[in-house]
Length: 282
Image (cartoon, rainbow, N blue to C red; front, side):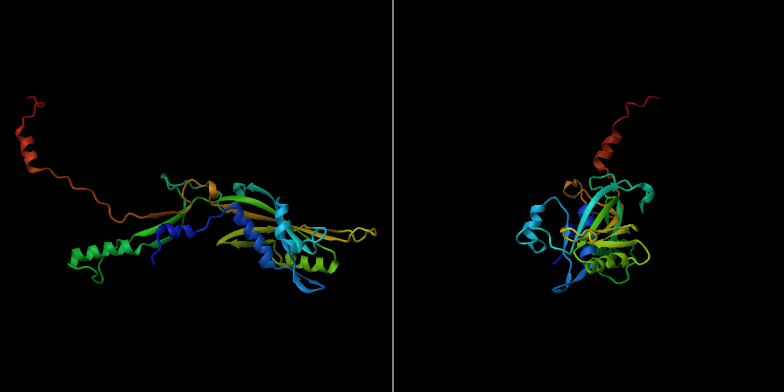
């Protein structure tokens, strides 16, 4: 079953703000995979994404809330994107800009190239027929190769700040939850996160918050809180649903340039020659 060019381009994903969010969430949820010791054994810590849709969490994530009071069950990790701003040119990997092609498809940056086998074979068969009198002749001296180029819009970089808050009711659990965050990048605060083939540079803030109310001897519930902040150098390659031009553009190179040959019908040529040139004056 052959796949059309439009279906090939549809497979290619686009980087949006949501793609960066997924990459950071997967980093915390799958890469770090934080677990703690509980009364029921060594269990994975639930993770929630902080959004305005509180009713959605109550209905669909019932395991993280008490049945009676609907209060959260600890230990727990929460993730929130706190800000998004366009990155300064001096902080971008690509500080300049590349204007799109001047046509309806647009597209600026070429990301892939492949040979169009069908069209290249047609050119080679045509040369074989012209030189040897038959198609599919071996070792035909032909350099007519048709390439397909895939281009995308120029990536626009954005600095996205995330806060990861962890809370527990026991000192041992908060210690176990903090260690994966502290030790992940080793002695550096830099690493990359991935989603759908896109890589994003991520920087972890060296200074992180830690607080607890263990010194308070009142009847208040004992809690241990820690917060880690990250800055992700994300980028976008489309406007999502608001994109008016194709996100992924497919073009082909010109192999042969042909000009039509001008011909004059013999009858018309004789008729023009027989007419005197009235514009000529001796």
